[in-house]
Picture 1: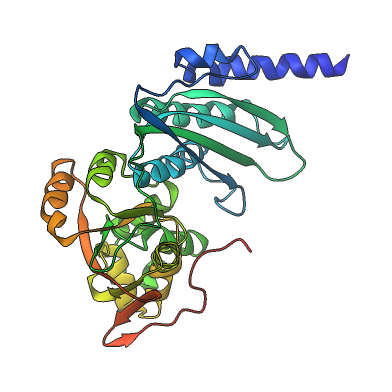
Picture 2 (picture 1 turned 45 degrees about the vertical axis):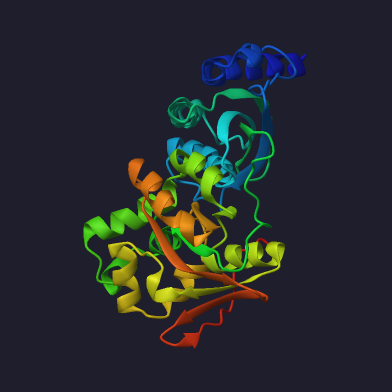
Length: 332
């Protein structure tokens, strides 16, 4: 029957493109209904999930190899912010009929490169046809020593607020992807424009810093929905306030040029999302050793403010507290 032929086609697809990514012993070469994950002795499992939908999280004509890498890196960023080392991941694909084998081959190739480089093999998943847009969902697993996961609810008054990398590039990259004329309006060089577009296409999760986060941070979370909104979530969970010096928020040369050309873009920078950096708090006496650990793995970190008693995250710019029309990216 046709159903048997379709099942056979799905099995061939899995064997060709995804079985080579399933290198962990507990994945059984994707030949079973489930996988087994055994955390190292004395360790907890850390679980996270995130996904992307064409037209929502990526442009339908984005390179498929970048889509595969992006969705895995989004999940790796969550593990990094918790201080966890990746173990493996599951993937669920919902593909429209227009997706062909060339697209799948490129998608799997990009996904496989990152699975290998980050030490996060495929454990299993599901593939379906859909009448809607392409949808990819990943659930990633990590491990860390028992009871050492860094939560967002444990910030303390007096902590320094630290952020990795630079903020706002991806959000500006999305605007530039929609309208390439913005590059001229923002007075961007070709290199600057390329940087913003690349940061949208391919996040840089800070997994090399996970151990330092686990050993130093009082609280931590990844920045996916915008620095302003995500820090506000951390403050609510911890029952504290934060005051951030916007002039001290690290910006790339490209973002700085865009904001200089259009100062109102500072809101996009702080609230637009897709940064996949880490915002964390730590005791001031730990800042020096944390900076040294970050420097050792080549990840820039910047102190941008302090935690205090109270509620909410205040972003102060030019002596004034900013108000945002949309404090964070939200689907709802």
